[in-house]
Image 1 (cartoon, rainbow, N blue to C red):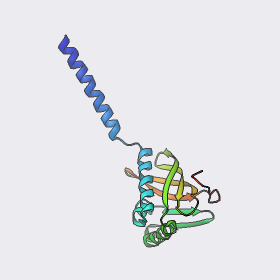
Image 2 (cartoon, one colour):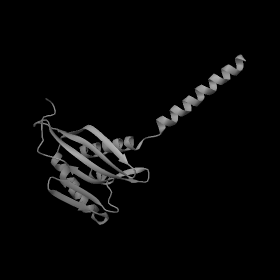
Image 3 (tube, helix red, strand yellow):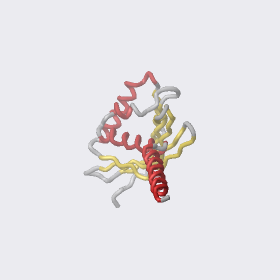
Image 4 (cartoon, one colour):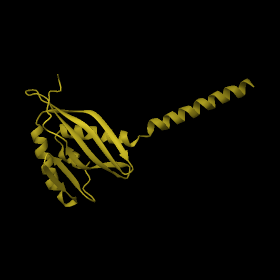
Length: 161
């Protein structure tokens, strides 16, 4: 009887370990999107427009950028124009470092939205904060950004108050 109890406990521990291991290895869509946002922040900080462009959805309806009233649209044939557009934006950032704050991800089937604030940290100027709304589309096991929208640039503030 004692041997059966020991084997039962060992089996229960093994089952729990497998379940916990599978849960740790399985990423949710929200976690994938948050990881992608961090990769995009890292690429922007490094000035890598090519790494940013790789996260964007140029297939289907294409990729849209909306900043205030200005809108740009890029399709599969516009890769060079998109990379130039991104490079210009990254040049404007200069040596500022970027931080994402208040990230919220909402997934609904094959579409998702990510809302967050990008905080630009500059040595010689006040920090700037811009709320962003990204629309994403599932592409296999990955997500691609279909729209980047800066919600307001008038709400700039110092993030170090």
